[in-house]
Image 1 (cartoon, helix red, strand yellow):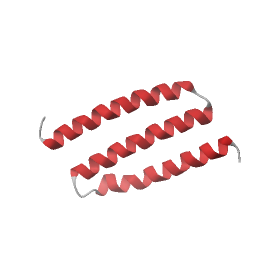
Image 2 (tube, helix red, strand yellow):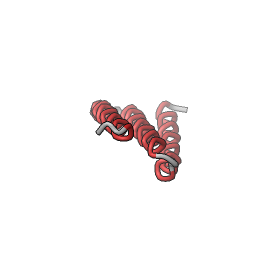
Image 3 (cartoon, helix red, strand yellow):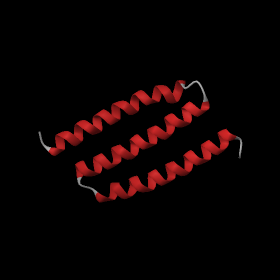
Image 4 (tube, one colour):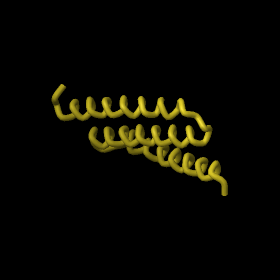
Length: 87
């Protein structure tokens, strides 16, 4: 088994887990559950971006993943602040 097979398999497993996470995002009983599901989805997206950058040997995708992770963190903080009633 080559490295490309392992990276492809791992990316597909994370992708399938992200699809299952959509059920929690849509049908979460509370807004906090939906916020956690959205944050987890963003983490999966960053993970997929890093895996695909290793697969395609692209450094630019790593930079984009870092920026996306930072923006995701800021978005999660705004959602948490809104749910707390601070905005």
